[in-house]
Image (cartoon, rainbow, N blue to C red; front, side, top):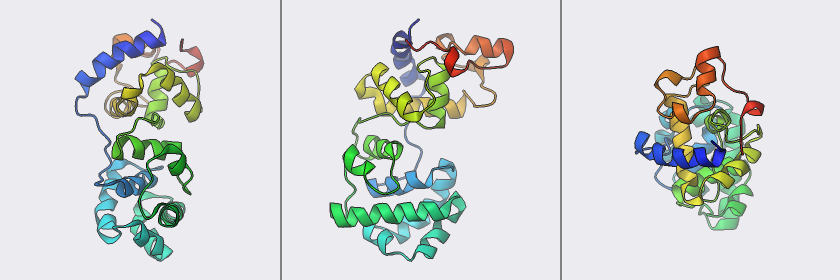
Length: 226
């Protein structure tokens, strides 16, 4: 089975396995999602969702983040880790949003990616989930791991993995594709010990049988990504 054929089968399976798959960061608007996504780096959605209710009550606009005393903002997000860099990223992004975009989060890849502290992954999260635009595929640690194990890429670099996936997955499924892989990665295909014996897509995974037999998943260079 080629990677393209595997994707076609997975597209039939994922909606049945995870019909409610969605972004697990809590947000009500593009600004909240942008901030939450910045906070999620090197943290968990659960931890971020514990921090953001109070944060979002205190800072309701891009201007309010931009004007906040930096130590105050750092203290508010401290438990998410790397809080100094994250606070600088949030202020850098929101100040540019105020200065160049009238206080509103832009809705294009180029404009989002140009914001300080906002990379392609963050931009994809915001575009796909806040604006419902399929401009790319979010590639996080779960998507990297599952894409390699499923034989969809030989790459290790997130940007190159995204390009491989965009060639295989129809555009209308780009946002959901990352949701499905992230949900499966969190619930079944764990990093250290994937639950292959109960995996719903075991028959479609070239790594599954090898892992059950040897206890070791296929490495990227051993997969077929045709």
